[in-house]
Length: 360
Image (cartoon, rainbow, N blue to C red; front, side, top):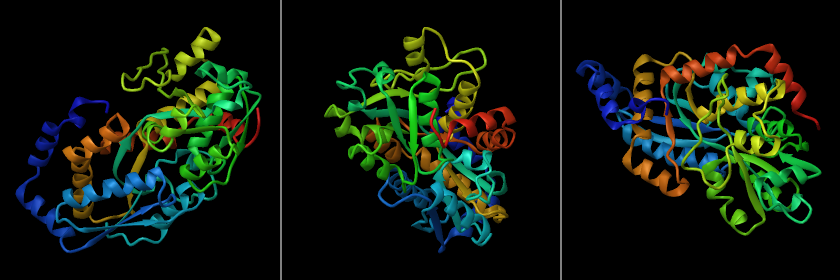
């Protein structure tokens, strides 16, 4: 997303063309007649699962050798069970990958449910997305009419998979920085489960992707029961950020904050929130191979992943469904994000620990 080159078919053609014929032949031979198992760590039927299954159909077309692709759900601990399995038990043959939502907090906070670290896997590829906050309108007395009305709410119940679930944490920190009281409700199996809880008024607030907001939650919002509050954008050290011309239902979070408080956010809570937004705002879905995959397998997986993101049918389908295209996170950039995760400051970690798992 950061460069025109990574998004262009022309650039992809140059990359593919740079492969020497012997290497390309060897890569193509590796997956011929084999089966690639794609493990997704969230519940079947949820937005992440639907996305992974749709994308996996493209992988089969674009991985040299055209392997059979089988998607397997392995739920638990917000995706950590799937990551642990791939790291600890999958054979190092490149025939098993975990393709999940990126879950940086589990590693950053030392969540015991996640025994693997992202830098221990072989990075295959990543997908970027836009995160948004939305809520039940009736959490505000008389009903919320505009995003700034969230300030009128008493205590907002925030749905989350676990205490280290990044979507739940983004939701909590969104409210904490604004100055809205909240309480997390954890233990859901996936985003679809949280949405059902929102429809039951069990929770009031959820952080999700723009695509999910427009599809699964679309009728809920159009009926007036739900209301988009803000979409998240990374802010640099100088206070600069880039608004999305493709999201018109709600303001960017810094714009909402300025509307309410008359200035940009600041302080430790904001620093932690902005760090997490930078992590998952650019890298939403991540595909990882079991460690020590054969070079030919890893090369074929990376080629297939990048080509699949540029597939014209896939791009058209996602734009039609979500109104925005997904962005490809190339290997060097994905590895850089993972290194940033490993080097997160103790101050940010302390603030995240204080912000999640309780009320403010």
